[in-house]
Every structure is written in C-alpha cells, then in structure tokens.
Image (cartoon, rainbow, N blue to C red; front, side):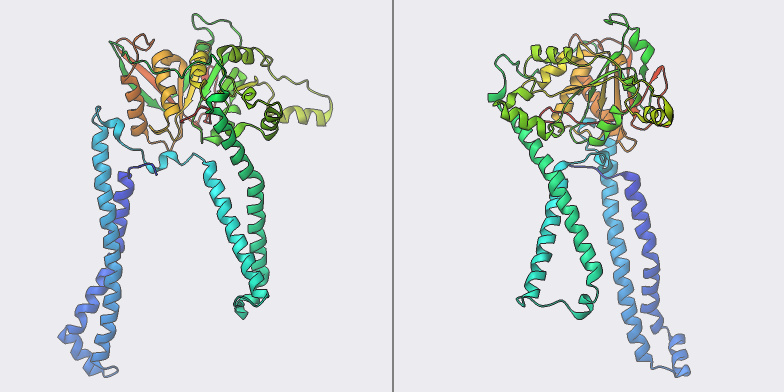
Length: 465
C-alpha cells in the first residue's frame, strides 16, 4: 500500500477531542477512588445507615476501575494522534525544503477520487463467497447435517431471505458486469505489452531528455485558476488553421468518473478532444472481432503512419442535428447531450508505441490538458507525460486539473520537480517566471468563453500509469 502522510489539523483536532473525552471519566475515577476514603463522607454514610460503608467502597472501586480504563483509552488515542501530528509537522517542514519536498508522500484524501476495478472484483468475490456459504449452510441444516438456527431466528426468515436474495442479485450482477470487464481489460493489457504484437518498425518508447536547460525560470503554481483563453489559443502564431481546437486529454488510469465528466464538458464545443484509450474501454465485440480476424494486434496503433491514418479517418463535423417539428421532436433535440459538440478521437496504442504517440500528438495540439487528481510519483506513465509537457509544450497552452481534495503542497512539489528537470531546448526555458494553472474539476463559476473551462479527469491505455 502506498505511503501517505497524516494531516496536521486533523490529527491535532482529533487529539484535542480525545483529551476532552477523557475529562469526564477521569473526574469520575478520581471521585470514586478518593470520596469513599474521605472521613466526612464515611461519617455521613454511617449516620445514614441505609447501606454498609464496605459496600459503598466496593461499588466505588468498580466504578473507578471502569472510569480509569475509559480515561486511559482516550489518553492512548490522544497520544496516538499526537504522534501522528508530530509526524505531519515533520513532513510539512520537509515540504518547505525545495531539495526534498518531492519526497513527501501525499495526504490520504489525495487519491479518494480514483476507482480501482480490481477492488470492485474483490468485493464481488467476497459477496459471492458469503452467498455460497449461506446457501451451503441452509442446505446442510435442512438435511440435518448442521445445527438448525434458533427458533427466534427461523421466525424472522422473511427479512433474512430478502437480504440473502438482494445479496445474491448484487453479486450475480457483479459477476455478469464487473468480472467480465475486468478480465477483458486484463487481456487487452497483456496484449498491449506483448512484443510479438508490436509491428516491425514501431519506435522504442521515447525517453525523457537527459540534457537539462541552462536557464530555468521560477514556476508559480496557481490552484483554482481558469484555463487559457480560447481566443488566444485559436489566434496563436503558427496555428495551422482557424477551425476547431485540437485538445489532447491526458489522465490517470483509475480516474474513470473524470473521463465521462471531461468528455461531457464544454471543451468539446470548441474543438476535438484526443485521448488514449484504456484497456477497460475496449468493448467485448471489438476484442472478439480482433481475435476472429486472427490478429489481435489489429486493435492497436503501433506506428506513426497508423496514427496519422487513424486521425485522418476520424469524423470532422460537429454534431448539429436538425431540429424536428412538433413537441416531441423539440424535446429530443433539446435533450441531445451531444448537440453542438465535436466528436472525440480515442486512440488505442500498443504499449511499445504509446509514448511515441504522445510525442507525435503534442506536436499537433493547440491545448494539452493533464489531470493530476490522485497522482503519485509511482504513476510512471503520468510522470512521463508531465515531464514531456515541461520539455516540449509552452505552459501557456497547458492546463492541469485537480480535485478540491487534492493535496496542494504535494502536487506543487511534484510539478516543481518536473520543472527543475526541464530539457534543453524547452519552450519554457529562460528567465523570469512561468505559471502552472491547476483548475478545479468542478469550478464554482462553471464554463465561460473566452476563458477556458476547468474540466475533469480520466484514464489511459499506457502502461505503468
């Protein structure tokens, strides 16, 4: 499991809460320990004559023991939170050291937006085991080979049966939907890294340049910033045409919800969104057809010529359906979520080619969007993409995305690490200051033209991300 660091404020507040919680049982323990030994109270109990003093002292000892245990538990929990708080303070001090800030792990909340398909498969398998075990027990109990449930349980078989039926339906649905998708994704991933399926002449994975820029400007990381101006992107010098924008969308593997969010964002109203397809986005019919054709390699793009041909074959017209007459036709036209959007250009690249494909696409794009929600240094594919943006794309044409729960100091340190390794010849080299704009996935102001929108996140086919 990847390392995370505790949050200083959270641990401090938790420690204070535990200390507050131990006050009441601590006070009760003190009273119970010392009150029965107080002579005026002893005289009062003897004079009252309702209960023996020894009995009072016995009950007080029991209450004092219980209260002492509760107070000790709260104190131990407070101590644990204080230890984690000290650890958080040390990590934050390291964040202030530019030479070591990139070594600090992120907060636990940093990756909460990611969904792991393997975790869903494990949940389905656990549910399946529970259902099978319950059914097996009921069968053995009915045959007299296992103890029957108590009478008070058998009288409530109705709710139990409904619960068991619901669990069976959920696990059955998971086995029909989640597990086949997981197996298909695993198959495509294996094919993507199989060297036998790479076409001859496919380029080797591109390497990050080793020669660093002589002059590297300072980098200012701004969170919650708006994206680049659509008007500036469309009118920048050297752009090939004045038509729709070409947008490259890069993202982490497990940020599935962000893919749908970005592809549904207003960015597609101003241009084509290019993205690398993930193994999980390969449909069963597509994989079956490739196998039936005798060569699963036909699914993948493995050469620059194939990439150019695939892009040339993509549709180029915006989806502008004709508005039909009548109330029903108008309703359908208004409810068409693709109306006014350019088509998405999804590319499935072989593992031996995807890095070269990123390099080729960067040369064609007007805007590059890289979602860093949940990013960690071990996400090698995204780390490669981040470094290539620093080395090859002016940051005026780059927008980063993140969630509001993102660990901002951690992400800032990772951006500055890539910035400090800038390659010689980078368009970002020079003097002065550059700005990295990190837009929120769900900005409070929404999308506005000509200011670029803050989009969302998604997944990729590349290996090692």
